[in-house]
Image (cartoon, rainbow, N blue to C red; front, top):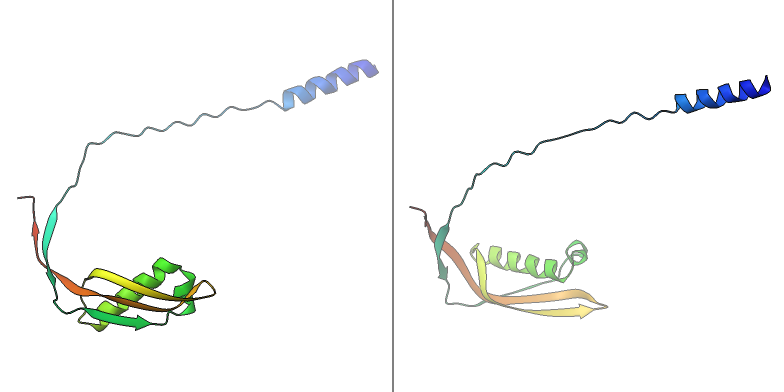
Length: 120
């Protein structure tokens, strides 16, 4: 009787642990679409060279050296006529314990003018 009960228990456990297999499928349709545009502009570069010095905040320093340079360039452009780009960029970093204490950027401010499409 014990053997029959044990066999019944094993069979019952084996059938109750059956696995259900679920299959999911998806279809990605290949679409052929392109959006291309080409725009060009003239660059007006100022003859005068500007210089801007700043002491970056801790938040700017935490972004790394490139972040400090970008912040200094952005401030220099804002303070000198709100130009678009600083051409012939040069910068000098003063470091203390591996952090930028003072940065000086110099260059020619320039503005983009006469935007036009090359796709006609």
